[in-house]
Image (cartoon, rainbow, N blue to C red; front, side):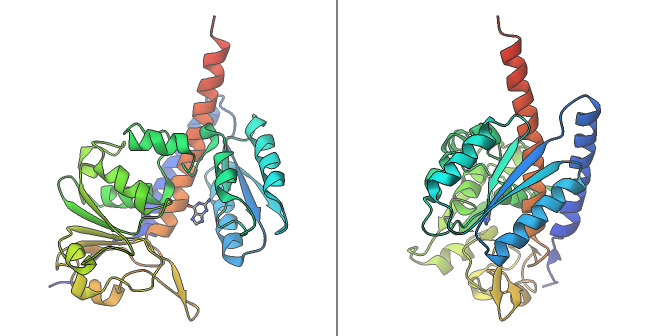
Amino acid sequence: MTNALVLDGKATALQIRKEIEQDTTAWKQGGGPTPTLAAVLVGDDPASQVYVRNKERACVSVGLASQLFRKPHATTTEELLDLLNTLNCDAEIHGILVQLPLPAHIDTQAVLDAVHPLKDVDAFAPENVGLLVQGRPRFLPCTPHGVLQILARYQLPVAGKHVVVVGRSDIVGKPLANMLLQKDVGLGPDFANATVTICHSRTANMAEIVRSADVVVAAVGQPELITTEMVSPGAIVIDVGINRVDSRLVGDVDYPGLSAIARAITPVPGGIGPLTIAMLLSNTLKACRLQNDAVKALATRD
Ligand code: GUN
C-alpha cells in the first residue's frame, strides 16, 4: 500500500480565502457595506483567545471588518444577553460569533439562542439548524462545511459512499451527518448523498462499523482514538480533533499508522482547522448580503 494523499487544509483554506477576498472586493465595489463580524469572548481561556485572534486577523486579511467584544469571566448571562441584543440591533454588525466554551456559570444555550438568525455565522441557532435538517440551509456550519470543501476540492466524492462520523457534537458530528445525507447542500450532488452512520460513546462494535466505512470522520476530541486496526485500507480519513498532548497537537486518529494505509488523510495541524476559519469568513460575507437583501425587501414593500 502506498502512502496516503495528504489533504492540505492550509493551502485549500488559502485558496478559499482568496476567492472570498475577490467576492468581498466586488461586493464593496458594487456599493455594499463592509461585512463586519462581532466576536464575543468571555473570560481568559488561552486557547479561545488564540482562536478569536486568528478569526479577527483572517477577517481583515480578506477585506472584512471585525470587532472584538471582550468581557470578564464574571459576566452574567443577563449581561451577555444585553450585549447580544445591542449587536443584533446594530445595522453595522452582520455576523456575531460567541466563542465557546463560555464560563460554566453562563447559560450557553440561552446565549446562543439570542443571536439573531440572520447574523448567526456559526449556524448554531435553532432556526438555522432546522433549515439545514430540512435540506435548505441558510448558513452552513463552519467545521462541517470545511470537511465537505476539502473533499470537494480534492475531487473525493461522497455520494453513495458509507461515511462514518465518529462524534455527535452539535458543532461538528450532528450537523456534518445532516449535511452528508442531504441531496445537495450547495457543493453539488457528489458532495452529499452519502450513507451516513454516526458513532458515539455508547456505540457497540464501533471498530466494526468504522471498518466498513469508505470515509471516516473523527470528531470526538480523544487523542488517537481511531487506530489502523479500525480502518479499512484505502479509506479516506478526515481528522477534526485538535488535542494537546504534552504541548504537542494531535488529532483523533493515529496519523502515522493511518497515513500508511489510507487513500487520503488530513493532518493535524494543517488539516480541517484552517478551513473552519475560512468558512466563517464566507458566512460573514453571506450574512451581510442576506441582511442587505432583507432591508431592500422591506424598503420596496408596498
Ligand atoms: N469553539 C470551538 N469551536 C467553535 C466554533 O466553531 N465556534 C465557536 N463560536 N466557538 C467554538
